[in-house]
Length: 510
Image (spheres, rainbow, N blue to C red):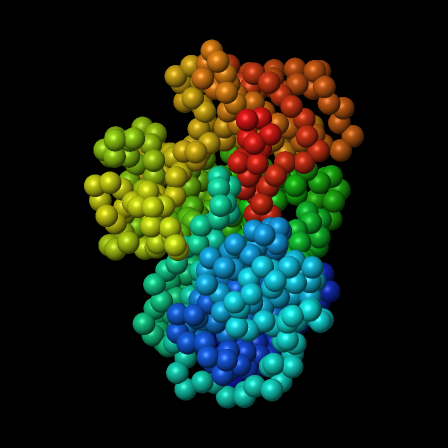
């Protein structure tokens, strides 16, 4: 399925609505513009397996480009707009993009990238002029509105968040079928029936569209004929207002968004009618138990969590009822088979913490231009077991629990300490807006536990607050896990999907 399959039924139905302005892209416009862009790119010489790079904010045109790629057998790489021009240039060059399409709102970065990556064949800009780029609107106006006779299915090739190093491109194999052929893509086949997406779905996406889940779930909504409501950027109260205004039925969040909404004043939280919401999906980062319990208490049992990755090597799923029986779990496997292994590669017994692998019938991904990283992700004894570096354990019922990422684990005095547990314990403290926990070198212990806290507005920092937080933690976690030191910062380095960029945080201490 793809948007063109629905045009005859409801051409004027909104395919995308920009939440803040009410701007609408209809199914007719999405189909017509994606066809015209596909025609323009084909005339420019692009063929199956070539790459498009897209640099944009949360704009409805993102999906015109997305569907043009997916109906042309092309790879689309949506680039993190918050990166520096040098970092953007690295991704554009690394993915081998022959096309760069940009939003005029990112003019300064786009013009620098055009200079730094001169070998791009096609450069288009929408929303206004950008030096060195042709007009997107003019290119579409000059192109044929007739679909190409051959429309091989394309795919996204997205980059990891780069929380522990340079972003890695994740390149799947292109499917061997046309864009409209059944069974469609894996995400539609899995998530459509799982969460009840259909033509009545109104899906709120408050996260950046360059990330895997927001981009792909928007594609699922269009494949099944629903309406996608996109926020330009997340704001806790405006998100609640959007649910009420557009009668949102489905939505997707990350835990930091839950925390921000829970910390709104009670009078604000109860101001909006959220009764239309049937499914609130969350993923991207582990959710503290207290945070998720508070959200279920507020919204009801509409929370659905999945654990997966940009690599799409496997997934687990859990609904609210299951989670209430297994607090903290991310559920049993729903795609692939979960394996938990020790450092020697041996599979571990139930309840023991180790590296999480997913077993599949064949290798599901490769890191672009990085065979060493691909090899590191594969189990040494099983060529179709892959990991993204997370650690956790499986209980006797097959439910997976995450403890942290392997790269973030602290070894202090020979004991493993998982920062996530400490961060989760502080998440809802009224004086804490954000917190990151890292290990720093210690001559005696090897590493010691360091907390970096972003205080709430108007909170006075200093030794008294550190002592208060230390005592708060001592009542909730083992004393040896309590940070030896607390520092305070105006802001922590997080991606817009809520992942803490611990490489940047550690760099301040190393």
